Length: 261
Image 1: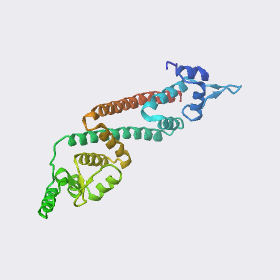
Image 2: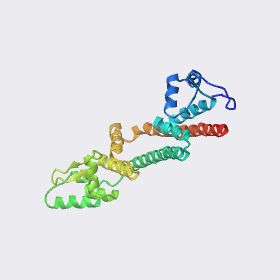
Image 3: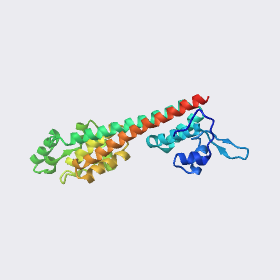
Image 4: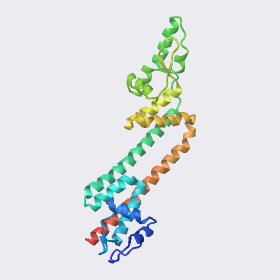
């Protein structure tokens, strides 16, 4: 907003509100929440604001898209209380979260790339088990179409118990061999297990992984997810730019506060 910060001009609540496309009640609420410095009062008790308040409101509204309402509010409150270390910590957390989300996207893309590569149809252990069963007079046709829990766990570098835990969480849905009752992981199950493994390595809980895997399933494969991934990239880039814009406005507010002091 083009206010003269060097002047001692007074702004009514309606002036501040109209200049930012807000209601006067919103401005009062922001002051009460600590987003704006406390306003001066006239002898009749009416609030009066200054260009510094306008700068504070600029900063808050610029912080909102990148940080969200709760963090933006906490940042402005900390600044207005002089708790700069806390304000910077909150800002750092938002940047760290964005980086974490970028790494998650990279993990998903890496997992999807891996899933698109042809792999061995049968592991050595599964082949040996199928051969032994056939020698005993039984034919295990499902073994040639997937992996058993042990070989798949070794391939991923995890314990079989982990795969069973993922099954209970709905991340993988192995079938059962009709003769042995062993779990058999088909191509889709291996895909889901690899994707879950990548996201778990990124520190994501099962509750957050399940929707991603369900999206892969509902998309009917990997190719339909390309548009989703592009949109994910765009949203992360937009958040990054919003964080940058918020930082610029906050810096301007900090300089205005210092100039006033």
